[in-house]
Image (cartoon, rainbow, N blue to C red; front, side, top):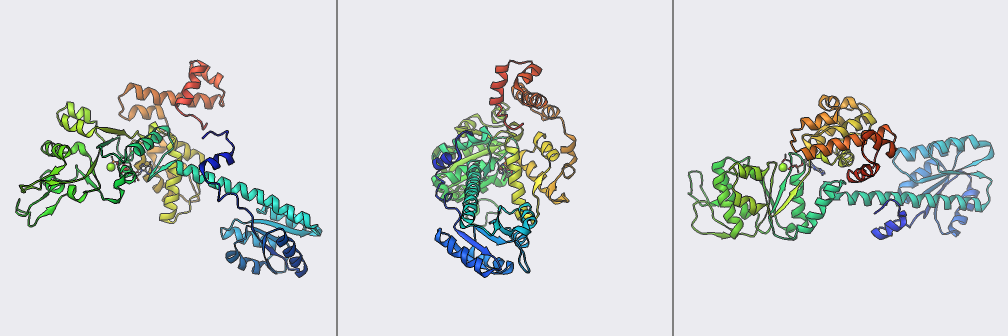
Length: 477
Ligand SMILES: Nc1ncnc2c1ncn2[C@@H]1O[C@H](COP(=O)(O)OP(=O)(O)OP(=O)(O)O)[C@@H](O)[C@H]1O
Ligand SMILES: [Mg+2]
């Protein structure tokens, strides 16, 4: 998808056409003059609209829920509830039907007032039939646009979501494609990445996208179970195999039969068990502790670790043969600071989710807080962002999250270059990239997007700058 393609074409290609092109059908006419109600009802029905009428603002309001009008055509001046009150009450109820007001010449100021309060249009009484129909046609156009926008937003949201993973950055989109491609093969998948980057979500997505989705997804944290219990936990045991084995017990491999077994923190697996795991991976047979027979299992393994397994192998803490056996397909989930494009999307997601869950009414984040969140290095990655947003929402006093609602760590950590250097990352290449991106963004901000000037300040060629802008996906200055 490119931005230059017309919305309609794009939506057609996305197949979302059907729901978009049915627009204004139902019109609710509210007026205290009986004759006018009759005239409008006849006129609009003749033009194919479904029409209901009400003689007062109150009666109109009572009809709104059951009738579900697309347009409310209301007189401004009525004995009790006028058109303006009706409009405000509708909005307070969260109803966003298009409102068109009708007003006599002497009441023009009220019509203008109504427009300011969000009415879409007004017609002046007395009117010719054409004028009302024309106003409705205009409203129809607007409604079409609104629906298109909504559909477009939904579509974008869909594109940025893969099972429970939300991301728009190119690197995560690549991961989405990889998962889709490999999900159905039974190959072992190794997911690596810093803490809180979403490794478990990736593992779950692999399961969900595979034909095993109907089977169980069993997760085990290899680092959390004491070494002497882990073997029986994984493979099960026979009654009497050891003191506490008072009855036969199935292990997690058996639990995960026909599904997926997620071996989290695989780097913590003791060496002795690494041998046993390798054997299972090779012939798909397990043996319960204390049992003489093998059992055949059908399990897809996804393993995850925040450690560098290849370094662990060199240090002798991880078996090389097991490493190769696990590393058939490797998915590296990048740290959040290397995919800052995902930050705004994740913020929006967490705010909406917490509003639902905590009953908070946060509507947005002010510019300063947004900038701090964007620039922070997120050593705890998405998990840290998730917690930060939740905390800020609880602390926020108004409907907006402001900088003061963020922890000192984030407010103080202003210099992203310093942060990158403090992150513990030792790769020259990665660090250079992060710093280069920061400098380019700064130069573009300083020159208000003038690329020629920015290239001069950066002391790189114009061509190099254009290439890098594309490479770093800098779109939002
Ligand atoms: N792309 C994402 N979209 C939505 N939520 C996310 C995303 N990435 C991570 N999260 C959320 O962040 C939290 C951490 O994710 P997850 O547990 O998958 O990370 P992890 O890499 O397994 O972390 P750890 O190494 O600490 O086990 C979870 O609450 C998860 O739902
Ligand atoms: Mg995890």
